[in-house]
Image (cartoon, rainbow, N blue to C red):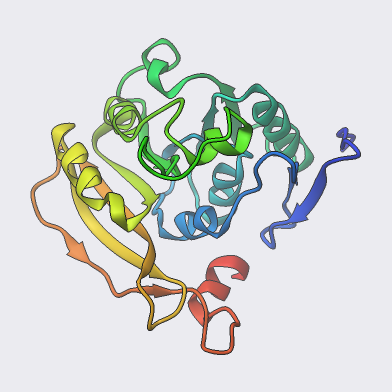
Length: 245
């Protein structure tokens, strides 16, 4: 398929179904957190999926490869990222299965009907106003810091978009866990599964994966930790499976 690739962009192999993704190293390239989230999210046959803050479109493309969902939509506020993600969709021949939309998480009511998705995924900006430095509103700043949307905005959008008993899957930082739990319950999204992600087995977690169910009953399960690296620095078997199965 004839898709324009700019000189400053690169095309990365996703090791799934022969899929690739276009990325701009000067903007923001997806990280292992997005890949891990795609392995944590459960999408059943025929379900419709929304990925908020989709960035490069990595999660919809990976979920299309890994699951039997019927359609995958990504919502992104940065126009350049939307254009690049759309080219990745065309490059993989996924126009009938994956849609990338330009829009604001805070304005989903103008874009989509309520209760129109079975699953919502999100790899949101991690840092709130008190965390880290923000060197202007660069693409990397927008991806990492809550300058254009907050945790509250993301959860509010997910709660509105999900069907009753629909599922939200989120990857975030452990230091925001209290904020996450409180915000989810305030929007009638009941936490169901937590999984902490550690770089190495003997170190503190660097990420937390969260599953929440719309209007679900109270009960949360803490899963065994997910370890990224073995002692020798190589990926663990579980991470290799998530990447290359």
